[in-house]
Amino acid sequence: MTEESVVAVAQRLQPQLVTHLMTLIQTKRLAHAYLFNGADGTGRQQVAQTVAMRLFCQNVTDNLPCGQCSECRRILAGDHPDVVSVVPDGQRIKVDQVRYLKAEFTKSAVEGNQKIFIVDQVERMTTGAANSLLKFIEEPVGNTVALLLTANKNLILPTILSRTQIVDFLRVAPQALLTALADAGITPSQRYLLTTLTESVTAAQDLVVDDWLKDAQQAVGQWFSACCMGDERAFVRVQTELVPLALNRDRQGVLLDMVVQAWHDALRQQNATLEAASLAFPQVAQASQQVAQRLSIDQLVHVMTLTLATRGQLAGNLNFQAILEALTLEILTITAR
Image (spheres, one colour):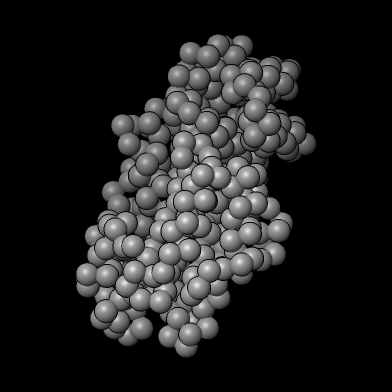
């Protein structure tokens, strides 16, 4: 991402919030600790970088950082001595990382009296790291600003929540995302599905890399069609077609979300035939229509309830294949009647 585009993206995704934060900086009313809470793709990182640049920018224009001066460029490059960022080391943010952060901030600011630290994915802190950070927030050193970034504030310790100003990021409207996906050249048959799985073009593009989404959409669609017909081969498809696409925990979650959307298509077609552009799985629209006509509303709602429960099962560390196989068997007991 270029220097200019960081501010532009922040303004596009969170225009009112950016204006508010810039005004707080201008009037010297910025608090010492914020929690930026928003789903991936809502601009958490870009807004945090914009705040950091505004605090140090040498050429503020219209109350926004220029993105081009030496201070802005160093911040964007991660090379500014008074702006320290922490990201997970592997799966977690560890206590040693927070100790390093605290050590850096006990030093005097190198190029002014302001220091700022940004902790991304703060929900991944170990308990020790969270407690260490809490003490730091309670007793800030000098003129410091803490920006904590998370996709889910419900995973943050209540003691940290109570000592930060929580900023909830607005979600991107589905219709606006559809337009943006079209502008980005995303295949029409994938656009609606992506609006149910992601909240930004960037996150959507991550899924279409190497045709992963294309393959996943096809595999889930074929599994869904087999389930609709009460075909026991749906059970086999879990191991042969779906599991190979579950490259990591994140992709497992996406696949389960896709399963939900496949059945949601059917539920939505109980009373109306939808256009392909309004379906997550347009390639199996006929199977979706047929199962919607064959099953009762209560049966479809029951299937939806079963699919929605899979995300919680995955979060509870149940095996992905076992989750889908159990789901398939339960669905087949309904559709095979």
